[in-house]
Length: 368
Ligand code: SAH
Image 1 (tube, protein in one colour):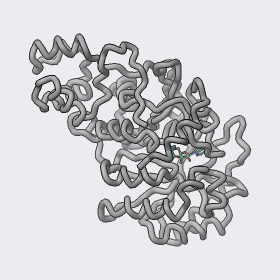
Image 2: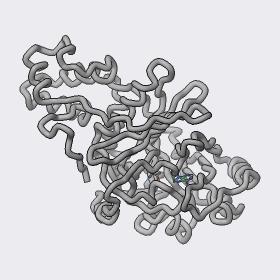
Image 3: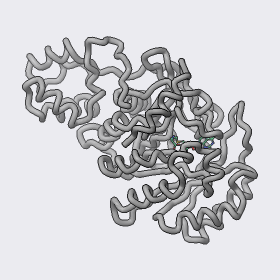
């Protein structure tokens, strides 16, 4: 499942593909000390230096070796768009002619980058336009962390990325190893140094991978719930047929045990006449009774072939009030970047050879 695309220069090793542990192992293999990893991370992510010759605390022979055999390569910007509300979207060109999308959302006191994990998506959630694109491949670690690298460089001094949400294209837990390595770099003090509360992974509910994540990487967890019965969730989020609600809730409870006062955020897209009745809201209160939970209601963002409509403002607020009164912290996600198709579920990129969804779904059976 840890597929890495062919690099532009197949002879060279892209050092953005390693987290600190991976880099240390790489240097030890070269007969170097493991602390070279922290030196290199600082040059790349904090000093923004790409030329190995300028890395003055490395020996001359190591610099020569790195120049000959390694590279620091990010995806290239194909299109940059700025929305009227300050949201920026980049379409990034990856190897094999695909494009992925990354979105920067500026807010008072913080800047959030929404990062993609796959080219397209293998899941078939019926309300999501990325799903309509089909699936091509997993992104390499360098293409995931490369989104931060490129975005921060483009923003320059005008804004700082303070938060990352793995909520772009793809299901991050179906690209487990590469996503975990990239999140390690986001949180590494020698790279981006973001706190674990500022790095959030969102999943549609790949239950076995949720347990693995709880074991290896402590980041904030968001779960795309969207329905309170298996009958409806089977339709909206079809992976529910494989991992039904009671299994999903158990995995969430386990994750919440990681730290005192920890909560799981549940995302709930508001679809008129589908999942937005007050009975649904009561069902939500019941379902989440045993999980330390926050709820994020997402107004549905339509796309050309979508069959759903967004719930009315009134209904979304009624829903929120009912949940708040039941003691669950509930927020309504502000729709941002709509005029450049950068809102939730609107990221499409450019996915070539979309026929691989079936293959990827087969792999989910082996996630252990
Ligand atoms: N595959 C992961 C990551 C995607 S995150 C996941 O499912 O969690 C993107 C969030 O936006 C998810 O909660 C997703 O369900 C939601 N979403 C998808 N399409 C949407 C749409 N058209 N309108 C609003 N939210 C949408």
